[in-house]
Each structure stands twice: as C-alpha cells, then as structure tokens.
Length: 116
Image (cartoon, rainbow, N blue to C red; front, side, top):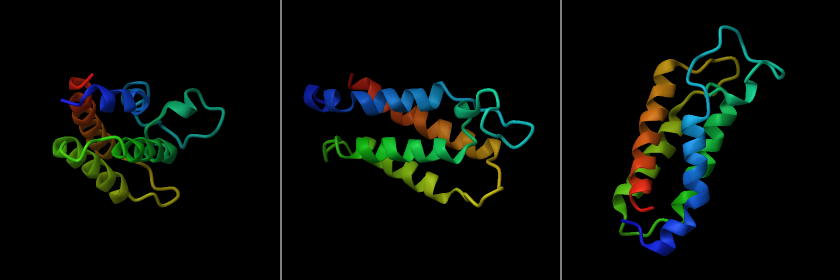
C-alpha cells in the first residue's frame, strides 16, 4: 500500500488516468476525425490521447517509492506499450491497441486505488 504522503502526491495523476481511461471513447470513428466533429477531443484513437497517457504516467513515476516495484513495473509497461505504437500520420489506431491500453490502465489504476 502507498503511504499517506505518497498517495497524496499522486491524486492528480490518478484522477487524470481515470479520466483518460473512463471519460474517453473506445470506439473508432467511421471517418477521420476533424476539429469540430462531435466528441473530437474524447476519442482514444487520437495521438494526443496517447501522449496524455504517457505524460500522466511519467509524472506519476516520480511519486512512487522505489519499493513499490509492482506499480513501477506497470508504469514501465505502459511507457513501453505507448512507445510501441506506430504514430505515422494517417495510420489509424486499432481496437486492439486501444484495448491493450485500457487493460494496462485498468491494472495501474487498480494498484494505485488500493493505496487511497
């Protein structure tokens, strides 16, 4: 379990990870998204969603005590997974990529929530 000081230091990051996981759309749009499209900012298929996940886990990484190897391992797994995605312009995300990100976020959020 995270101690009180460590768990207070991760509130923003945990909240952000929950929002990224649960407040964004898993489905893939029928056409390429364009600014102004309904829910444009809420799709996980957009590269910015992946960048936001990476930023949140990188910030979180600095708040986790060295002894919490379970959480640190999940953070490293998410970083590696996000880095493995091909972000070539015009190459759409796949359902499998989004499902993989969701599974990893679920696991990390679960571990972090135990310490709250």
